[in-house]
Length: 111
Length: 114
Image 1 (cartoon, chains in turn green, cyan):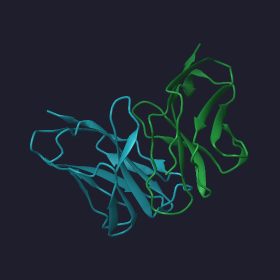
Image 2 (cartoon, chains in turn yellow, blue):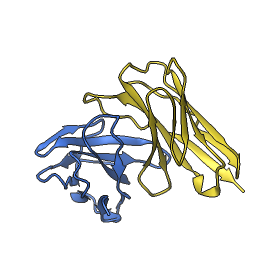
Image 3 (tube, chains in turn yellow, red):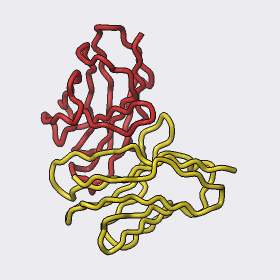
Image 4 (cartoon, chains in turn cyan, red):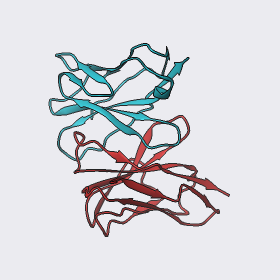
């Protein structure tokens, strides 16, 4: 299973765009990249998933370069309510290997 | 509204006591999971189940047991053999097993030792 590396923490002011990068150098051909958001005392919530290039939904964008060895979660115009831990997961598109949630990136949005 | 319900939200256990955490889903998902989260840490997989009457150990299964008698239910028992059970426990489900299937999480059960 591909190991991921993310910054432990990030700070941002309200209204700014935030980019969180995840490194996954040994990503496999069948692996997808998935991001979750977790607020304190709640379960993680699925944000976005991609395989290559760019994916965008109403919450975020996910940028994946051609070599797929990294990915960037982009949160446009963050607000205080975006303060949370963000997890990057990389895993097989099929098979039985368990997912690994690392420590994630703790984003603090400041007024 | 479909989702995952975990109960209770808070649970206290005495030393040497077994306790069972409930997890119910009405999403018609085949796969279900139990995770443990310690303060400031990520999630660690305890057990997962891909189908009724089948379950597999995760990374930290020692001291825990599960059952999957019904598709919608996946209870976790924290046994007295688990020496450090104080943690936040999260249950999740997905359409089927596979990392391209987003997992839906409950709101967790916080277990503490008296």
